[in-house]
Length: 116
Image (cartoon, rainbow, N blue to C red; front, top):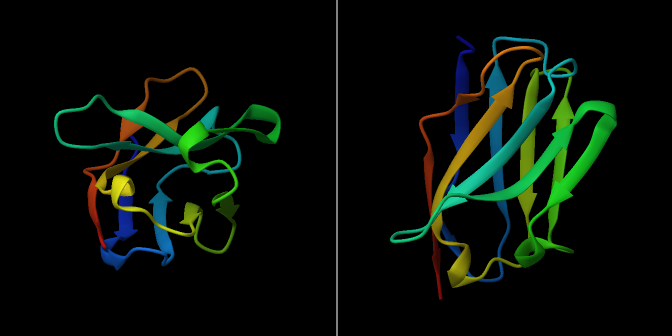
């Protein structure tokens, strides 16, 4: 079981920037997927951004142009930055790591609230 430590989030003003970090107990550069998902109250969990094998990236349409996801070697983490925050970005954000040939591991989740 992969160990994940999420940090960041909290209360952020609309128009501001969100920064989330997820440190993993496995090599973040060799996993099949490293990404961030979110779930708002009453809604299904959805992809925000992810990096897959070969450094391919996927982004939700709702964050396109506002999001950046990178893997940091010094922290062995996958970090998310989301700019120009909107109230609809309010959700619990989850880190997801999928090692090659293993099941996915999820973080415990971080609450992000965007105040207008």
